[in-house]
Image (cartoon, rainbow, N blue to C red):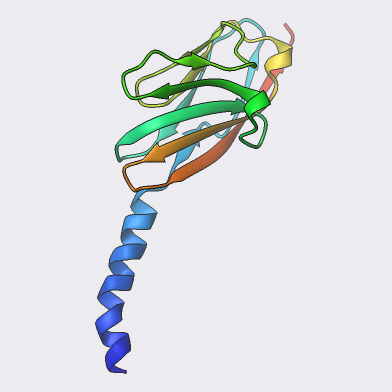
Length: 128
C-alpha cells in the first residue's frame, strides 16, 4: 500500500502531461467544392520541433507533402503539388482544391514532450 500511495502522484502527473500534449487536426472531416481553400488546423499547446504532412493514413516517404524543421523553409516531398502551404503552427493550407485532393491527410510532429505524434484528417472534394 505504501508503494501505491507514493507512486500515485507520479502517475497522475505523467497522465496529465500526456493528456495535455494531445495532437489534433480540426476539422477532422471537411467537405468542400473544387476551387476552394482549406486549412487543416493543428491543435497542440506545446512547442513543435518539426512537422511533416502526408497524403494517406500513414507516414510513408512516398506520400510526403511537405515538412518544416525549425525556421528552415519547407522541404517539399513527392506529393507536393504547389497548392499546399505550411503555417507556423504546423497547420496545412491547400488552395484551389481539386477532386484528386480527396482522401486522408496525416500530420506528424516531433514535440517538446519528446516524441513523435501523429493524427489524421479526412478531406472530401466535390465537383461544382
